[in-house]
Each structure stands twice: as structure tokens, then as C-alpha cells.
Image (cartoon, rainbow, N blue to C red; front, side, top):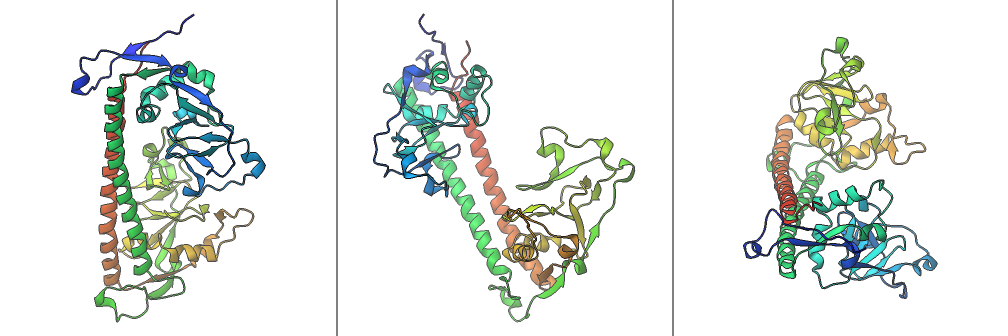
Length: 412
């Protein structure tokens, strides 16, 4: 019995193709075939198959997994333009390779059988219409498993005319270049702030920063005080469930409303009496913190009154200039202090610090005028970083919307 073919028209189309009629849909095995070429001398780079960057040499992303020379003999050759069905293929993880290299024999390497445009399918395999069709036809595929070539062969894939493939690929690829440029600028801004903080705050073992604003050059060393001298522990319980708004500490976004962070309520109103009330300006510390810094284990609440789990440590400064300490808790100086008193035990990826030791940690600070100058400088940079991140997110959302309109959702 011959395989059925469907046709459909995209919602958004370039003017020159308005009268070209419907797109043709064909089955996966009509466009791509599995390739298992193991004829190599093992001197090609081993590729990591990633969702973010596709197939890339492992040394480009610091991906280190020991592989014996004997096992490499069974690896498959991946050529530029090949696609690889990955372990996360149920999420649309059919990755593209811009590199000649080797991949594990566990992966399925796909190569085009017809003269089609690789970039067109590179974008299509990441599109919502494709992922939706993929999951509709592949019940039971979950994380850690990949679709087989037989399953791929049963998926209907669009095949518009070559000229339209070229136009769509060029449009989306040019947008990728813009997104990449915006992302590069964002990373440069973050690196600039990181370097600036290293100079505006003292280095480990020092009490004077490398760089000081001219008006403070002769002010001498920063004053050292224990955290407990300038901040107090807050343990106000939520008696009678007076506050029902639950907060959580997000590594990427700091303190946020639980409802904005999770798809559902993790904690309900009925069991909040043991939770701590957290007010604006309170700092929240997670004792079960990772040794990896860049976002810090301490966040300041700027979202309004709420409650948080008693597993967190809540403290409040006796000073109005909390913005200075918000920046301070992101410095290498602070992380060095944490590590110096950590008792990680068997878990080397976690720090274990007692409450008493935590409040005896030393903090360095200049006078309030210098604190404010540092905050103003870093806050201005934070605003630039936030604005750039928002522009980048808008571009990504624009691409998602564009892809949904340029690729029709196949309806049987």
C-alpha cells in the first residue's frame, strides 16, 4: 500500500509564492536516509549533540567524557549538513551539524536523499508544528530515549519548492544572526560588569579595592564588621495564615512569587503557619547552596510581603543602603568568605554552613557616600543588561511566532 501524502498552506507566505499552491508533505524516509559510516582513522573531533548549538566539537563547550581509542572505532562519521536524532528527540532534538566529526554509535545520523535545502529543515525540525506532530505520532517517547529511523520515516514532513525553501531558510538564518549578535552583546555586558565588580570591591585578602572613584582615593581601608553586627535574623512566623502569598528563590530571577515561577501552586494556604514572613528589603539565604557562583545563594526581596519556607534564612540590615550589599553578595570576595567556613562533607558540590558561622562572616564596606557611588555605577550597568536581555527575548519570541506562521501545521 502506498504511503499517504498530505498538502497544506502556511499562514504567512512571501509575495512571490502566494500563487504557488499548497505545500506537499512526504514521509521522512523519502527525504532522509540513515548513514552509518564507520570508515575513519579516529582523528576527527568527537561531536557533542546539544539542543542549543546542534552538533559541535566537545572541546568547544568544555564537554569532557573519557572515551577509549577502541570505542572510538565504532563511532559514526558525521559530515557537514548531516542531521542527528538525539536523546531528546521527543522535544524536537533532531540536531544539525556544521562540523565534520564523529558521534557515538547510539545516535542516528540522517543525510538528505534529495536536493533539498539543509537550513530549511534545520529550522523546521526546531519548529512547534514539527514537535507537535512528532509527539502526536510518537506516544511513549520520553527523556532519555530517541525516536527510531522507522518512527522518523512515518512522520509527514513538508516539501515546498526549492525556491521557497531557500527564501524561508534565508529569512530565519538572518534572524539567527541578529539574535546571535544581541546575545554576544549581552554576554559582553555581563563580562564587563564582572570585571568592574572585581575592581570596585576589594580582592580576597585586601581591604581596599583596585579601583576607587577619585573623591574616595584617600579614604583609607574599608571597614570590616561581622554580618551579625549590621543585620539581624528574622524569624517571624506566619501565625494564623495571615499572609498567603508564597515566595520562592529562583537562581536566575531571585525572589519571585511561586505562582509566577511554577506552573502550579507547590504550597497551599493551609500549611503556611510555619513559614517566615518576608518583607521588602529582607535578604534570603539558602543554607543548601551550590559552590558554583554566579548568581548567588542570597537574594533580596523586592516583590512585596510574602512568606517563605523556614528552610531559608531570612535577615534584615540595619542600614538603608541595601543595594550595596545586594551587589556585595555577588562578589568573589563574598564567595571566598563562604568557602572559607564551609564544611561540605561528602557532598563537594554543596556548602554546609552553620547559622552561627554565617552571621560571623566578615563584610567589608566603605562610607555611605562611596557605597552609593558604587551602587549607582553597577545599577546603571544592570539596567543596560536587563534592557539587552529583554530585546534578546523579544527577538527570540519573534522568531518563534515567525516559524509558526512560515511552517503550516499539518492537518490530516
